[in-house]
Length: 217
Image (cartoon, rainbow, N blue to C red; front, top):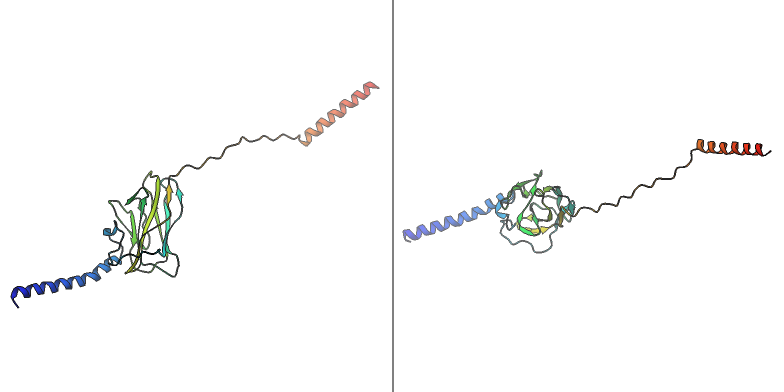
């Protein structure tokens, strides 16, 4: 075997070895949360295709309509509490512009925040691969924003099993003001004569009648 062939064989062998070693390194990184590279597709870098059936995990929002600048609470949890998930990535999108994440999340105890689409803290993800049955998050809309928002969440059950962009219910922010109730002028009740007033009137009538009878006689 010539020197060039030996060198090529050695290079190929080293390349294959590096690819094999790269697998565990990538998985280890994803176990501590989604990277910013997943912001656009929201697909973990695990390799397999996402699940196509209904997700066994849901994102439940606290309110379907809130006023401007009002934070929204949400809970990520399985439909069946016996079916925990290990990882997640959640973002909020305006329904008219579903390609750019908006708003900001508040740091949770079992997760971390990342910056997507040139935003700041507009995505929340896990910080460890421990089984989870509930993740509570707080999200605040952009200042003075009004419109309709939907939350999309990628849930990871296992390294090879995950659901991408499961959607929450739509939340209306800065919706139409509530209809003010018609104010009716208070009705002034008729004043009843107090007992003392009633006695005074009755006594006056009796005196008048007595005088009239006396004069007639």
